[in-house]
View 1 (cartoon, each protein chain N blue to C red):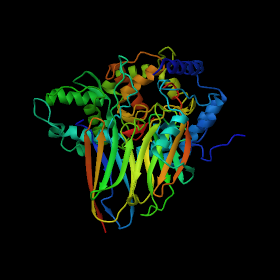
View 2 (view 1 turned 90 degrees about the horizontal axis):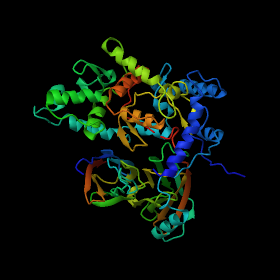
View 3 (view 1 turned 30 degrees about the vertical axis):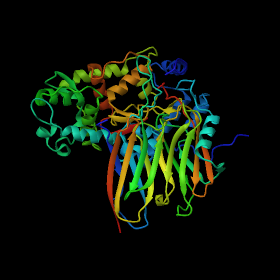
View 4 (view 1 turned 135 degrees about the vertical axis):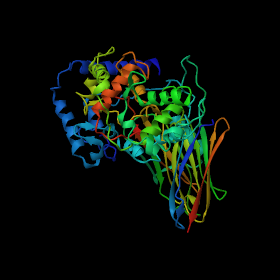
Length: 287
Length: 160
Length: 108
C-alpha cells in the first residue's frame, strides 16, 4: 500500500472515528439511528432472509451484496469449497509417528463431526482453558497422531477447519458459556466492550450500537461469526476468525493479538454466543 | 444534465450505498491502491484493444453485467454476453476485456467457436479503483462490437 | 504447484443440441507481480495465463488471462452438446505447469 493511500485511509478513518468516539457507550440518538433501525427492520421483514436471522441476530450474509450472496449460495462457485476439498484430503491423510489419519479414529466425518463445530470454542480440560476448533484439531494431531501442530491459517489447518465446519452447515450455533467456560466468557465479553487503539473504539460500538448504519459505503454488520472460516473477497483467500479479529484491531489502530491467543479465543466465545441460534454458514463468502 | 446509469441501484433496503455515499459527501473515495506510476489510461486501454482487434468496434450487441459499486475491488464478478446466433456462418470469435485504470489495461481474452452455442462468459476481476470495463466482441465476419461500463471501487468502511 | 486443485461443473448428460453451461474454478493465488514483500521487494508474477477446453479433441473454448483476474479464477462459458464424448480442461501456469481435468458427457 502506498504512503499516499495509507494517509488517505487514515484521514478518512480518523474522521469516521471522531464521529464514532463521540457516541460513548450511550445508545445513538440521532436521526440516522432511526434509519439503521429501519434497515434492520426491513431485513427482518424480508422473507428471503428468514434462514439468516434469528430474533435480533442477523448473519453477515444479510449485509452482503446480492452478488456476494450468490457466490456463497452456489456450492460450486463458493471458493471456500476449495478449502473443504483440501480438508477432505487432509482428513484421510496418514500423518505422524502413530501412523494414523483423522479418519482412523473419527471415521466418516459426515457422521462423527456433525454438530461438533457449532459448539466451539469450548473448555478443553487438557488445556485448562478454551479451545477453538483449530486448537482441538492440533491437540488431536500432537496427542493422538503424534504429528506436528499446524500453523493457524495454514492451508492444511484451514482445510481441516473448513471440512469439519462444513459437517455442521445449516445447524444453529450452540456454544456453552456456563460451567468451566464461564470465566473465559467473561474475559471475552470484557474484550468486546473495551475501547482500544488509536481510535479508542470497542467492538460493541460498531457491531452493537451502529449495526445497520453506513460507514462510507459499507453497511456495518453485527460482526457475527457464524460464517467463519470464510472466503473474504478482500483477502482473495479463505481465512480464520482470528485473522479477521486482527484486521478489525488494526483498523482501529490497535496492536493485534496473535492468532490462537487466549485473548482472541475468549473473544471468539463471546462473539459466537452473540450469534447462538444463527445457522452455521461456513464456508461463507464475505467482503 | 447528468445521465444516470439505467441499472437499478443495488437492491438493498434502507439507505442505498449511493445515497449513503452522497450523504457523507465522500462521492465514493476512489483511492489508488496500487503504485501511482505504472497505471493504465483510457489511451493505453484503447491501444491494447486496437492491437487485439483489427476492425474499428461499433457500439452495440455487447452487454456487461457487473456491480455498480464493487463489494470489494479485489474480486468483482463480471458477466459479458454478446448478441449472436452462434452458427457456423455467424458467430463470436473472441471477446476481449480491458480496463482503463488498473496497473495494466489487459484483463482477459476469451476465444469462442460455433460449438459454443451461446456467447456469454463470466469471470471475477481485480479493480484497483473506480474505472471502466471495456469489452470488444470480434465476429466471424471480421466486424467488432463494443460496450463499456463503470464500476465504482471504494475503500471499505473502516479502511478494511 | 502440487496442491493446485481444479474444480469443474459440467452436466454428465445433455440432449442433442442443448446449450450447456460449464463452470470452472481453480485454486491459485494469481500473483500479479505488483505486490511487494515485507522487505519491499516485488513478488514476481505467477498466474494461470491460459485455460483451454477441448471436446473430443477439438478446441471449443479458450481463455487468456492477465493479472487483473482475481485469485482462485472462476470462469464459466457455454457449449452446444452435439455428441457424446469427453470434455478436457487444461490450465497453464506461468511456470509451465499444466493442471488438467476431464468430464464425460452423454448426449442423447
